[in-house]
Image: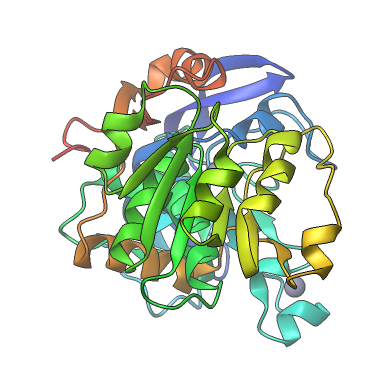
Length: 342
Ligand SMILES: [Zn+2]
Ligand SMILES: [Zn+2]
């Protein structure tokens, strides 16, 4: 008898279906995970709408995957059956391209990308590459760990790679799925943390999660930041090109605009503050397996937690629609087992 598992797959652009798929054997270097929770990320749109180059359907989306290893493939020695692990957007390097030879796995030119080149975590079972795994600390539930594996690592890694001093002034643009974690990381890394968001509605949440200062982005953000001495870094998490570009003026000398949002519109950058004051714009893409490990461990150490709303796997389409509509507060997480939140 063929054993099967439930999965929510995209069979054509924009169309989810709940299906039973046959359980596959693990290949060399792979593990099979019994998924407990999977976050719903805005980047899932690239899978669902078929925007990612080379994407083929059917495909199971989901790259914030937390679960338990139920099978290890040939050649896997570090991971054991029963261990709780996570995998994010980065699903494994090829180990052969030039970036890989230089240890820069996240910029691998032929990577495994979870939920894009291989089936992801909107499912009860997923095959993952062992080299892409992080171990989930006992202090985190699977539902809490899931968003840290993409939204978490994205903001954590961008901030920690930016070469900032303790006490630096750091602004987080957007208090949403990424930003509410960015504020927590910035505060707990020892930065003076400013949250930027339109309106007053998110001020309380922003200060609750650690912002020292909240600025309504409808106000003159650039002047407000300059009055504080200028930001040493601004982490742009809200995908609006013109809004991100406008923040350049709020940077201090040598300030860095850290871009993790991917706007569809261009960013019209004023070159003046780049040259006069040697400011820079830096892109940051997720991180590799050890960066995910560091994100999870730091979150335990400094008590960073995502604000989540859970949905059972069967209601994936509903959770996805809520995320796309910008109504998630702040991360939607699909759960496959009853105790994913315990
Ligand atoms: Zn993501
Ligand atoms: Zn490579």
